[in-house]
Image 1 (cartoon, helix red, strand yellow):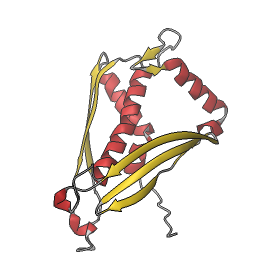
Image 2: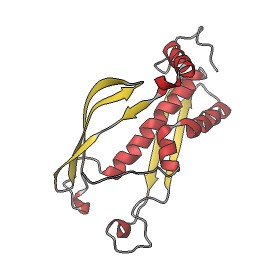
Image 3: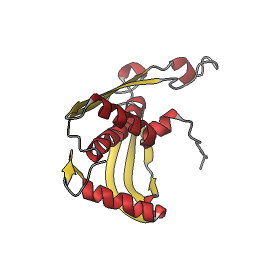
Image 4: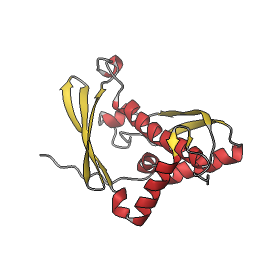
Length: 185
């Protein structure tokens, strides 16, 4: 890993702050507990609006104010006013992994000029529409290609890739089953 006393920032990541965060969480694991939540409201036809108002970090409420809209393409009975939930799912996993790639490169002192993830997946609408019980309603597989360019070597990029697959929350969330605990209010 990089000696943070020599270099203060790589790829816009403040290495001293990152080191302090890691040290604090190592000393007190409760400081690393993060709770995210969103609220989604239907806004008509296939549209929805999700609001992000806050999250909790180490027991402290931290205000946020974001709105995310979703819709379906016209061909899937929507109005094509926003990305659909599948595109947002891929966006969420790509964005999470991007943070991992940039942070891992920064920790190694590697300056990136490009960090790009292209993701695709295919699902069968017969599952969503309940037309065939043998067809799952979601993805069986997502394919993604990561492009890293900068002053690192191929071996360094491979190590970063392995580290991201081992530590990215959304990679973990999609690569392994998650218990979904839903209830009707």
